[in-house]
Length: 320
Image (cartoon, rainbow, N blue to C red; front, side, top):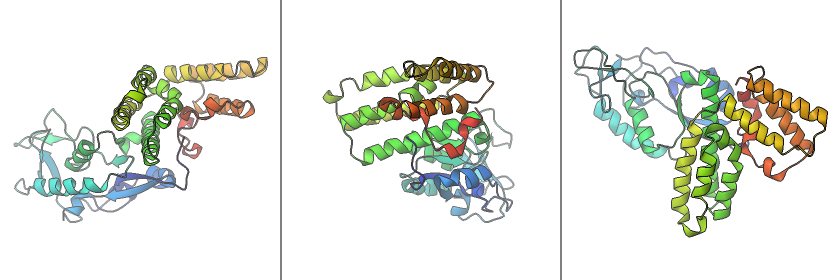
């Protein structure tokens, strides 16, 4: 189900994460994860909103002030230096260029690009209890609420990294499906291929989404596909865990019960149990399952995204 390497996925990114020296202090926040690992599969669209609205490098720092849901951006040293409208105008125009993206990686804490828990100050210069979101980041997420987004620092967490990349590839795969022309069969086949991925992320969602598609022939296909996509991305945003992954592994193991000999069954069962106990990472039982299904092919399992939701080279399951 992963996208072939030659077809890079378009992903937005804060320019400083690519090593561009665009921060207020003239520096950058280079992410080797992005430039070394993800760039093999992602085509990055680099944006620095603050430079784009004419703020120099280096520059006086700015921060969020006022209502956390709709803050102003003003100078730290000079509150009269207000760039709120310029940032909103830029953001409103820039988001029009982002329709082809399948994900976005933001920089932490930025008054323009911060995604989570950005400090917002009151008019006396004191941090407020309620946190906010960068003005540009808010424009992106408001315009594309289903777009997989994450902050670079959080991508250092193996579980969050794997979840984000899974969502990016799923988002891109669904977009590719729509480009080929929707049909009832294609939508049902897509849902079927994500059965075990959905079971790993949100065990209740697969049957719920299946019920949504039950009378597909009686519904407007475009409207149904949009409803399905919303529910799909909401389900995948929930993080898979050892318990849910183990449940999926055991389901997949069941497809081999008539093919494996006693020693093979024992070996597979042992590694699934070791994964459940945290002794080995997820890649170990997954690789064994894939090898067995190579020896004993099953057309239905071959279409399952769970066994390869993204390219192996990303090594995401080696750490979870």
